[in-house]
Length: 100
Image 1 (cartoon, rainbow, N blue to C red):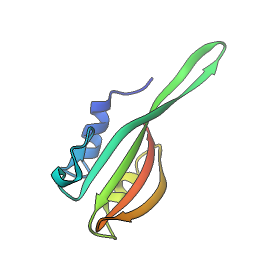
Image 2: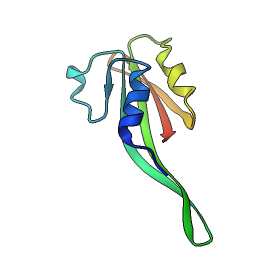
Image 3: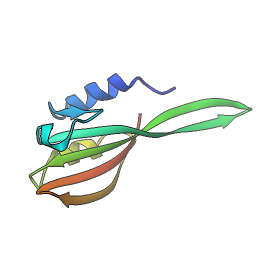
């Protein structure tokens, strides 16, 4: 079954000190950082019962450095998939989908 969100928080804090679940405004965040939010879930069924359930999160690495190693660390996590990249307001954003 799905693991607690605080486990994910601890995992991401192993990558960087600045991790936000319910992120404050962009002017209050410290960079580089990781921002994440619940994005959905996925369940598998067999014999009329649920046997696997994972929560889906959107995880965004935000860094001024266009060659940030933080994005590589998030991409290496199990069940992480790179979705897109975009620059905005002088910051680089890497967006991932992560099942946890």
